[in-house]
Length: 268
Length: 310
Image 1: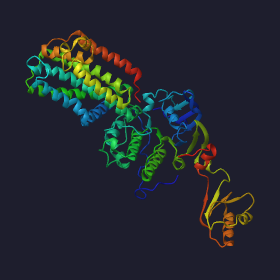
Image 2 (image 1 turned 90 degrees about the vertical axis):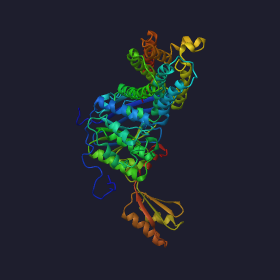
Image 3 (image 1 turned 30 degrees about the vertical axis):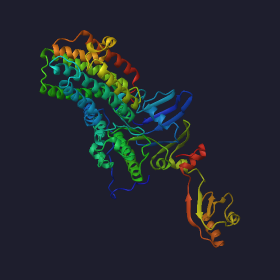
Image 4 (image 1 turned 60 degrees about the vertical axis):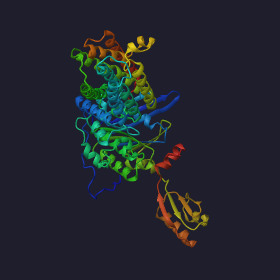
């Protein structure tokens, strides 16, 4: 082989032994931490994601509290917070996650990571951990603004609310992976945004199920959006355990979407 | 770590892969030893990428056997992936990720990776380490993908068209890196449709077309096929070729394929060169731009397949 021209004569760019093989998988915890931290940073850096997951929920929190667009019992803030929290979870775990996955697949990052020692399950776990990180940030921010607006949650329901948020992340997160992992990136973008809008208005989030027109009332209780929002309303407004149906519906969506996704989504 | 000495890094026997009615890989044999570079050379659609993906265990073969680092790669098991570095065609990264972040993420998947900061620097990615991936040039994306393939100190790397879209300096840099991998004992399986790349880098070249091996050997063995050398030169157009044939020993062929451009085919030695210059002098002309060339891999490929390589 002929020697390549060196940047500096006689000084090889790659010293002997630089690439001597020494492979071994990294620690699982470090892989998980690095992947989810990277994805969390990406989500916080991307304008559309921040708009979707932070700015719109914040605007709705303030707007629905101060403006009388939707009839709500006083103090309005107490009914607005559960709705906005449910919206925040849906925006991050479902819409944002699906769109990110759709474009990540397009850009070959899934194939790239699947070729490292990163196990398949960790690839998914890392994405869900990044979603949880975003939800923590959303909850702290929205909670702080809500308290400033006079929100006083029913303390007895906070534990239930935490459980519901986690179940909501599971249900919406697996649905997001199913959608983002199945269609072309542009289709994912369109479908995820349309579903977000439909569920926001007609899925029991902004308008409580009981105030929706006739046939919707029965359907909404079985949607993840309706189940999450109704459950959060029970926990945070009334301080009581959510209806068993809310919990079961969320678990059901998580299981069904997880099962379908594990069979259809190709992580390459 | 089961480093089996004497066993090849990759051994493929009678490999078959079909997509519906199309046979993409059709009875392919390969062998790659540790510390060697094997180039899969062929036009688009020859089955190069399919072969590499089969070796990575990303696809399931329809026939034949594959052994990678002494194991069956089917399903790309975690333990095997940890020992292999991969550069997929077109790289692969989050659209918004910075080059440095992406490399550190891939490095975190290995226990004792190379220093990502050093690797970015040496591959000339320092200046763009903070740009999002989608804003990197094709060449920068390509170099990042290469960095990701080698950062985990693998025993074996698969490089799918490692220099596609690179400028000459970038190509030279990548060639240098592949040379260093080989020197340090890494086995390299690369695909290319650039002749020069295979000639420059590979210990072994496998030319494939329609999923079959059409030629196999070292670049020298493939190109130095006996007496097929030729002499090309320029001189005044329209000189008398009959007189040249008389000067040359039997078995040589002289022609003027284009006006003023002459070609002599046959074993070229000093006597032949002397005959050519004598003939020119006899007609009051001077031979200019005289070149003696052996066959290139390109010639070999064209002879074997009748197809143009790009």
